[in-house]
Length: 298
Image 1 (cartoon, rainbow, N blue to C red):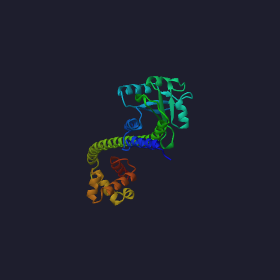
Image 2: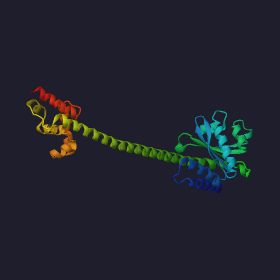
Image 3: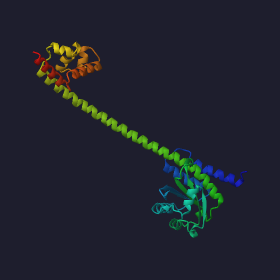
Image 4: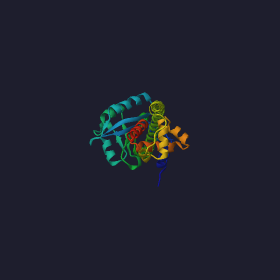
């Protein structure tokens, strides 16, 4: 049966977690969560440590008073991470995945002395964060420093309940951040594709000028009427011979299509067949090869 105290603690946890309902970045969720924990959970200081390898590194912090001291201590928690070896209390919490309270950490050899001294900690509660029951990714620490009070069992239970919901909110926020990064990367790729398309447009213009030069040289070298002999007639169909004549006259695929009253794709297909049958790699080579065949057949 739920006691009045437990019911009140549950309500406080729900109020703290309610601040995390709206979608936000991971950084915003961290700040909102720690602020909500202090505002509704009864704590005056809260710190989030992320698990980095075998260390706990300070990631976010909230003090109900003296924000300048909070900023200073966050930097200290980043410069001096907590090592997770067998002598440190948080290592046992990590292994058991349970919240704990630490009374008189100044006298406890298992407490991490550098941060205990820097934070002037008298007692604190700590809970691991493991989203969806997966691996532990962070820890949240909280105390009642500015009230001048020690934490108790009720604080441990409250922090444990908060850590569970906080972990889910953080996990969701990380996914939102990743999605935003993927969208940004997609926009970058689309922008790059647009640049390539624009460059291809410029290339098309260059190729078109090159075709004009090629067609001019073909007109000056070959003429427009090609002699038809039995060997050439055996290689090309009557339609392909027409296409070859137009190619020699300098017509583009579009010009060939217009002249023969066919689609651009059909004209392109005819040109491809002509090049393949004459074993030519381009139009000039096709016309030159035809002349060579015609010359040998004379």
